[in-house]
Image (cartoon, rainbow, N blue to C red):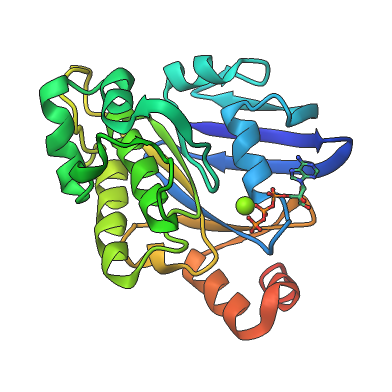
Length: 252
Ligand SMILES: Nc1ncnc2c1ncn2[C@@H]1O[C@H](COP(=O)(O)OP(=O)(O)OP(=O)(O)O)[C@@H](O)[C@H]1O
Ligand SMILES: [Mg+2]
């Protein structure tokens, strides 16, 4: 689903990723750990295609196609979607309208929003004045409408209260993989086959691992993937001994 080769990325004249190699196979969910400022968000923004993240070297492939030079909207159309750590607010655009524009039938918008208890926000401008936890729900609802094949989540559970984490965690899990194999289809408009989806999730706390069936974990350190292992094992090592010790231990 996603194949990244020797990626070097610069933002505002500063190299933030240098030599990233990463594979996320179809139907698999991978988790990305790493200290603040290590390049996690930069990696997801580069996969999504934000122009400020300038690719100096390397390639990004999606379903076998080289997408390194494609603009964001083309990548979204191909089936890549992202929930942002800090999404913009959009004055004058109602969340409900956006969900419909993304691809959800008008009469379904309220129904899918109510699944994450967000139906009362549909008449508000997108993310304007939303609390931290509400923004995470807004982002998730947009992905439920888009139903991409590759889902990128940048800290989907950070700042979310403990009760809501259950709802968010289960929804992310359904989006990625329902019990019958494919990802859940929330909107009927897209009559395409149920497909196996893949996910790449950034987390600091690892709470999401309680809900999502994660296949592999990666630690990003100083702008490159420094180790790959079972995500729970990585979380345990980081919590007990910190990042450097985790890398020393897991890469031995
Ligand atoms: N527009 C920018 N101008 C200058 N530096 C930037 C810019 N955007 C990101 N950076 C820098 O790139 C580095 C990587 O940032 P990034 O947001 O990818 O980190 P992160 O791993 O997601 O961290 P966190 O866990 O805090 O979210 C940081 O040092 C950051 O300050
Ligand atoms: Mg980040």
